Length: 423
Length: 123
Figure (cartoon, each protein chain N blue to C red):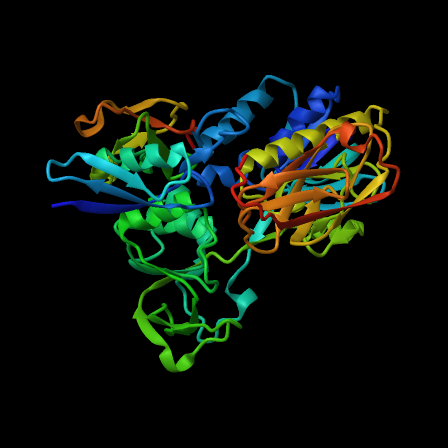
């Protein structure tokens, strides 16, 4: 149990990879009183239940399992004196950066922060979000909850499972259940393409002979106490199911893996300006939100596909929070970034022409050879873009030397050049 | 008889559909469908000796969690993955455990060790 101080330089809400990386950034920037608050019993966040490998190639330069990635960050933090309040919940953050922290062991505490970093991550969308008709028996849960049951609590969710949604968590859980000798009937995906990484299609589904049914969804649920069967049906190009072709599958478990929603209850209470395309707060190039001294990073800002990018973004947020708390600041942003052709969202929302930035984009639809254009100041060849994989763009000061406007549009447009070679 | 086997490349989001052609003697005649060197290498490796890392859990007694995540220290032949996981399921560790602690040496004769992916305190 940590007895909290009254004042900290930087308080970080959330002890997952984002929060821990932000703490490291804040320490690097010279903040010496840093607090992480997390509702779990230990640091690490969702990484602790992601026991598979494939993490860390970008950030640590080697392939790690989720718990190893978390442990690396935890060990890095242990080298410093920081406070960690686990089993604790931030109820409220005021505009003057006073946080109300609740915990079963220490009760309600108010702490004053020089700067705050929001790193609450994301929640999974549930059955209710897509309104699957039918009864409400037990046996229906999100893929991430099933992951926690199997990998940490040691329970199997059932014996015969159907998975709805081909996102990476769904694919990983299809393999995980198959390895535990649960019969996995198949993965059903509304879209005409899989949402997860090709690597996971091969190593989680093909390796275990688990079929992937595209353009197909769950249209009915039956069972009074326990799930007994689901009905699945193909959908047309407008995603309307053809109920005449519905078939029934006997199963006791339905896992839904249908996307993540940034966790922004606190952001809403703070009245932060939000971006409807990302579901997270609007942020500057220092990852500062519309409230002075309140920064944000990781899945709370936009859903990432790789934890490595969460770490990199959060290191920056933590450094800037540390600078803010110790009375330093970087020149304010002078250029807004606007989403143009085939760009669904951009983070950060503004940049400054005096320094280098990494800008993350998500595209609306898949495109083979394309140009990524930053206004008229820079273009680069992209080989292949898909909505499931974030595109990153390094914006260097030299691109902006002769640019004097206040907004730049980013477009991703088809590139047609016969015989043109790829990067 | 010429035999053609298909693989899906995992090198990048392009997901090339790879074909490996073999002659009567089982020698690779040609790899097709790849668009880069990585794809060709992947097809050859998948064809001759497909290997995977194993990540699973071991039951743990008296820990803050009921399961300890573990992984192999090297890739093992793909067709041994299920057997290794079943074997590991029969074990029980006792907390506390340190990160990297050896759980099984040379698991089922594969030459790979199984180690703890994290430390786990006693409850």
